[in-house]
Length: 251
Image 1 (cartoon, rainbow, N blue to C red):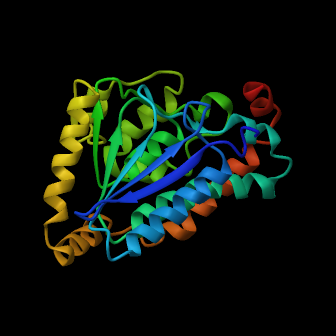
Image 2 (image 1 turned 30 degrees about the horizontal axis):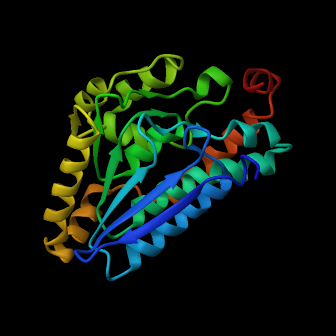
């Protein structure tokens, strides 16, 4: 099995209506197209499932939540159309989170890089451990965080987003991310994180579905144009990934 087809996405709903969606890839939970497509499809399907009251979005492993785009797949991009298709995968996942009628809790147990930061930002309430440092590394390889940018900027503001995007080789601590609104709370270890995530999920599972659906719409007000915007941003990255600079940097 190649790195482009490795990994998986699973979903399980318990008796309380808590649906846990989990993704995994052996390369530090990076995201090739196949995983992105599975994530978008699973979030959409479970969001429409009447049995689901609330969703937890998480990855496997202990110290890396998500390493972002799959470099193996970036190296394989041969033209702008393929680049657009790949980066549109991130757009589809973010829009699936945005349009999902159920609240999504993010569980970030470790570092989040690039698209992983965007994934965390696309959840409605994100909890993390102290190991969950973040970095938007795209500019360092000549791309730029164009697709995930709207989701990240919505959570942490333009100034903080600019700091992350420009200082592309630097990690910011989980505490920094919390102080700027990406994380709602930073927990000391995995056990504390899981306890906090489950406690919140259980409270939401017995809350009014109608009220939560209306709240979700309020929280995402003003983003109705993202179906078009994020694909336009994907086209920018899809062109830039073909540059000599990016080819050398990825190599």
